Image (cartoon, rainbow, N blue to C red; front, top):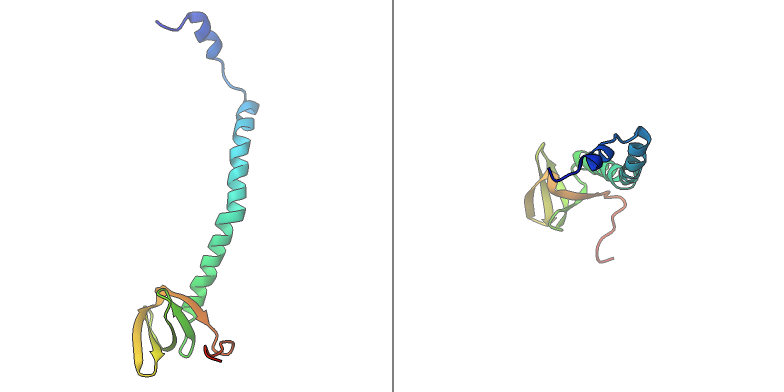
Length: 111
């Protein structure tokens, strides 16, 4: 063959357990850092957003995914009716709402 027998015997040795641990430690450390800095906070924000959207009720002011701002007039399991202006109502999918604004803290746009 192409590999000499002396080279094959020296290269065939097993790696020690400590050597593998030293090689894997940086990868594990990187994963732990990514988990605590990126994955965990994102999951927390997603859970809070989902709870906020599920708790939307009549009279809340909402922002849709398209940027429309309006007042909720009717809430269903899947849909919400939003009044954008007097006598202008639209039906939106509840999961497309991006923000629920508390009506007591919201101020009019032109004031």
